[in-house]
Image (cartoon, rainbow, N blue to C red; front, top):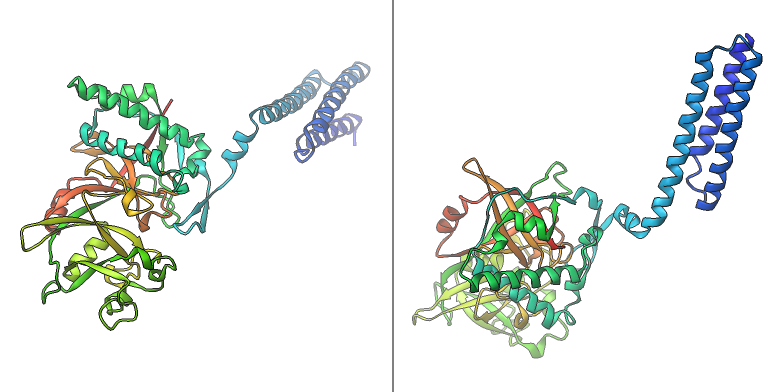
Length: 446
């Protein structure tokens, strides 16, 4: 081996060793790292100087070789300097970077862990396109106001709405949600009072006054899904009876409060209920009250949609809304009649959305209400959907003010309250004009 080759080998090996040492100490403390970096920087500088001095005494060391040595030394120094700066930035940013990198633990309605998800796969900063946002401003004001009042009146009794959820990774707090609702209420009231199109329909106003967070779907079963799935639900009108008849022979029940302490109703499936356990001679007779009688189709639609409008033979009608369930999870993909989940109802004065008990449920309106994952995404989130219709972009705004068993956990879907319909045929005809998938944004007041 020639002298030149030997010197090249020793120099390259020395620099490689220094580079390895400089880049492999991530597990050491910041103080020790800084000391090592300073020592390594001085060592590299000494090596570079020594090699230059030696090159003057060794005329067969070429200038290009000396320059290459200097270049390598400079690159190593830059790498070490970058590392030092990165560690200082990490210390300065502290918990925010740590929380952003920590997987979020999604939970179901029983607060049980279901899966981990990297928040960076779900949320990124975004911006609304320059297209007018569609919604009924009076209806949106009603639902936002009712949602804000729910926080005010029931948050202490319903800690679920105070969960930080996955949006904590985006520095979105419950206070931010309330601030967003308060601002939108103020803007809508002012614009409606002045009989003008609300500024909340202007994407430029939104982009200037709100953080726009792009929500990409996370579906553990469909890894490549990026747009949110938009399903639709409705209130159906059904004929029924206050008394059992040959046609209307399937009851909807209300729990009697004086029997609910032991939660006896959680021991029975829908099939158990339909077998007659609450009827005369049944093992739990007297613990519930029949509110009305429907066909089996009417019952299944009431259980699925959450609210039903029943017309009675005397010309009267009433809304009936789900109250408490048997706490058996809804099984996706299982046909309705085979589901074991069952709901008990109460008669109400309006279409009702989310609420920890029937007397506290939020009154909601079609077209501006989404049912979604309240535990993981959060109640009161303002959503803008973006989709194409007839070759042009369409934007639609609403608020998460309802939930359901299919949404706990669910980071890839929202359910739009479409309206009140006399039949499935009319419902299908209406929703055929609506998108099945859409880009989604969450708005947070700056």
